[in-house]
Image (cartoon, rainbow over all chains, first blue to last red):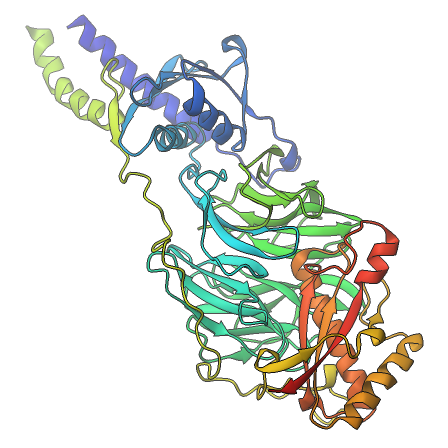
Length: 388
Length: 206
């Protein structure tokens, strides 16, 4: 009976601890936002692949590894015959997670445990079992589209055309991509179902067809076409039908959608200056975004929670920047790199960095600026797109 | 026993809570991970065939440009859809001497390039059976998609310049390679200057 009462006490305290960590949810409206301290954890009992996965997943989601004395959370477990682990909140003096994992691979089990740790300690939606698509390019310029786990493991080629490819984009919630391929001797936009391997051209007009971006509901595709004499934003249905021109500027690139599907943000030029702008998906006036302090902005990506726009600054080198979508704060330069793409939980970015021809993908925790390189597929890896 | 009476309902609540939180030491809750790491790309051994070219789904009529009636449409106006370079014989050598180069991050055709434009124009005027593909290229200092748009605009600027001296716009197509096909693989200004270019490829019907 004593034991039972003790258990009961444990449970209520664990519940209190959970509430405590929920209350700690990061308030992203605060200034000083991009210099947050990582959450200190002590990890023990894991070896080899399981330890590597846990360290990668937690580091790129804002955790740091310290001695048990300095840790807020103690993560303990084993990978012998399968991943088993627990998390103890040292401040609340209670275990907040205890779980074991079966099936698939040790690697997937470790990702699942990392996901549960993130959920239990930050209340963020976990990303450990998400996918990315990217471009791999050989020295001659030709390349293929690949898909992989978000950390770059398990990379598989989607195409095998030995031609120039560009800018893969996921259909939200589906195993299907749009991408640019020069396979028909012109930059055309293909739709490609990953499950069936079937594909078709949805935009193969004269001139440039590139930078497909799928609307959040999957029904529309925004893209860059030059068929009318200048590279502009066009929009069509998922199958390529009902094509409409949205912008008429001199030179537009890299459209992306707001998560509610009402806006398209893109890179453009105004009076020979590079700007970010947005336009209603139904057409209308172009509104220019204030990116003061971040010269030559390009490659915007709107976070799934609607709050942020990440983009690339071109100033000799390339830097990843982020700004509030409502323009309430000046852009902040995070790290060197290009092609930022948001994770489904709006906290992490995948991007590429390195010298030309030797690009590497990397995953960045936006609010602590911690990042780590993904496992490299063959060739130069760039233009990552996070499945969400 | 009094104690028991009090605790009994709690035992039930506790059992439910434990099932939900999995906090009981020694027997953690098990999460079954579905699947066996099967490949997510289907039919990997089966290379997808290229879809045929030609007719695309509807909606191909371009929306008229606002400000219609301007004398020189941007880039020489709408691009031709009635011929494709890969259906023709391509000659990269014939006009290779007239490759046009651009300033950094610019699609403006410089005055010193007018002689090259004139030479290309003369060739097209003299050979009515010729069509022209203009390839636009960039140096490596822009991002990939920014450069794909810039390369296209360079090709379109050259097309516009040829239209201005009387070449029919429907004879000229454009193709941007961004920074994917540098003429010089170097990483200095000398290489970059060579890479910011427009190349003229003569296409004749087979």
